[in-house]
Length: 130
Image 1: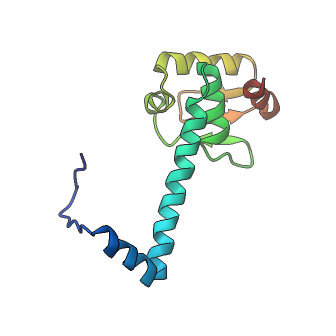
Image 2: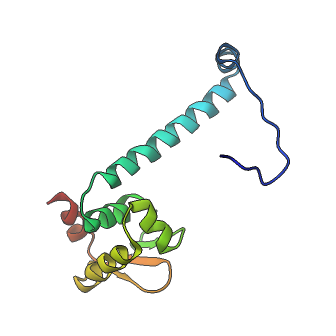
């Protein structure tokens, strides 16, 4: 179900009318293709994350692929760790356990904030390639 936060209108197009609209207006076609590409990219990343079997692999893959890593190898999590665990399809306890293991192995540093510092990106990448 979709619930609108403000008053909204819904336009329903017949398939042929929509195709005609796409072919007659390049801006609408480009916007539609961008939405499709973004969604496809997101779904491919999700498949990558979910294809791993262990919680450790899921967490490491997510750290390396799901977030923007700045020049100083810092990651700001855009949501809380419960949401992150739900996204990875693991429990919050498993997420914390794997983060602590990665910290103890000097691969990352994290604290109570939503920041993660990657300390050894090469060993982190080896974790999912072995």
